[in-house]
Length: 233
Image (cartoon, rainbow, N blue to C red; front, side, top):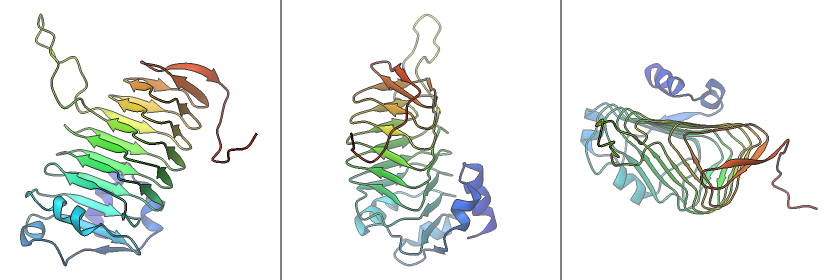
C-alpha cells in the first residue's frame, strides 16, 4: 500500500495494526481508464473481493482521489458508492454486511474495524465531510441505519440557520449491539458494551459505555450491563 494512502486511512481513524495485519493489492484490472487517471485507488486484502455488480456501480460516475481498502470478501454486499472526490472507505477483516449498502460522499469517511456482523440490510451513509468510525466486535440486527446527515436541509425560518445535522461524526466503540431497526444519526458517540434497543433512535447523543438505551429519542434504561453473542440463560 502506498504511504500516502496509508496516511489517508490512518487520518480517517483506521488503526495501524488493522492495516498491517493484512497484505494489500492495488486492483488494476476490471476498472475503467479514468479510475486510474483520476488518482483513485482500490485495495483488496488477500481473499477479499467485491461482486462485479458492486464494482460496476462504484465506477459508474467519475470522481478523483478516492481511497478504498476492502479487507473481507464482500459477496453479500449490495452497494458501495463513493459520492464524490476524496472519499475514504475502509472495511476491515471479518466484516459481514448482508445485503448491505454503503454511501460515502465527497471528503467523507467510512471506517469499519472487524469483526462486524450485520445480519440483514444495514445502511451506512456518510456525507458532507462527515464520518462513520466503528470499532470491532459488533452485532447489528436487521435494518440498522447509520447516517451522518438527513440528506436535505431543515431551516429555521426566523434565522435562516440549518437545524439538522451536516457533516456529522459517528463513533461506535467496541462490542456494541444495535438491535433491529436501530437508527444512529448526527453527531453520536456510543461507548463500548452498549446495547441500542429495537427501533430506537440515537441522534446527536452520547451513549455511555455498559448501558442499554431505548426509545425515540433513546434514553438510558439500564446501567452496568454487557451482552454476549451466546443466547444462554
